[in-house]
Length: 537
Image 1 (tube, helix red, strand yellow):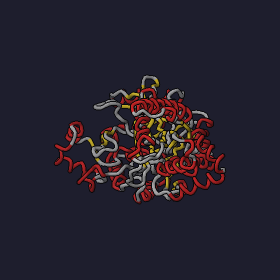
Image 2 (image 1 turned 135 degrees about the horizontal axis):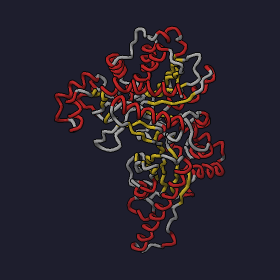
Image 3 (image 1 turned 135 degrees about the vertical axis):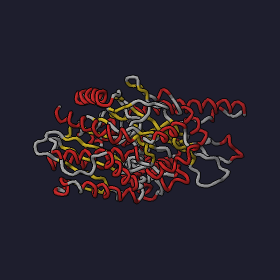
Image 4 (image 1 turned 120 degrees about the vertical axis):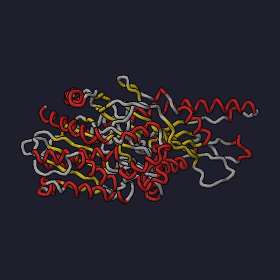
């Protein structure tokens, strides 16, 4: 082997520090610049200095970019796609140490003077001097370092296995990078005559419970979807509350039915998805007035295993109808107490967005509604969730005669669940790396069917019918112009997925940290074993 730059623990630690030093927070200027640094490092590898066209920065529609780097052996029949993301969450939680959040060595040293501020487990890890603290160290720039190292080793040793490195922005927000990379994967496969046989991600191991010290790898990833509801009541003055219907109250009743609802959880082979929770709830009044809020919105986080968008919408409709019945029973009781005419009791309608839109098109004309959606999307200041809310609100205002009502819709993002544990390739690889870890390192590596941190592997295939995915698009206000998922291209990706990554703790916290001995001494050997096993399968 000739001179290498990414193989020894010291080299990998230096590379990690360099990549972490670029504070590539989602939607920041540093996120835009980051792929250029990766490209710079990769072009130091002789293979890529000769084949520079095999490294490409691909622009996304919003001005960011994702990077691909291909090592290709003329005799190879298999191609492994190594997926990572390079964006990180913000660093506000670091407080007065924020200036060191992207300087891992300096931050780790500084924390020795702040021991009393750290939780007990972080204090113990710091004292061991085996952990590196800092934003992005474990989530997930260490994984990217591993992939860059593997690319260099494969090129240097001329492995008969093609490796395609793919590193993307925006995983922490909307996954623009991965969603736009999927169609590009098909182009690259056609251009270079590649057969994708495995998708490898190296997100860190996540504890399944507090103080969990087990070692995991994952054969799939949990899904995430955001069902949302616009509650449309009836306006009135606060001095005449019984003449109206408060939408903020309606939303609170609905949220009571969704929050921690075990009926909305899934269990697959003993692993249970976390229960749903409220992410956003507010009324849509612009200013303070003495008019009650008669439009209110809520967004819910729902995690998926086997279910898809079509399944969830039916479940949420059932929950919303139950909530509407409880609202009506409450109002009936109050009408009796206040001696009101019960024949005037309102009936609360539950509608899907696609049903509201169909009604609006019938009333106003499809062309008008399409133009309205487009104008809201282009004129609304805020992110895609705010835009989707405004579209629903505008249509509801046009169709007030349907009220009072609960309009159910989806807000971005959507990460479909994927699990390939039953794939023969994965079963053989799983057995191999479990045995290898036991013999080489003396620990038991445990398979988990669903990575519980949510990741871009969600888009590395499609589990479910395309017709079911259409249910997502039709209930997404603003449609594909606002937010699109390449379901058709995903359906063409049939290779299994696996996630084998470093040991880390406290992702998205100021105590985010990486276990160095495993990351740079054991994990590289484990990943090499995995790839070479796959080559020989």
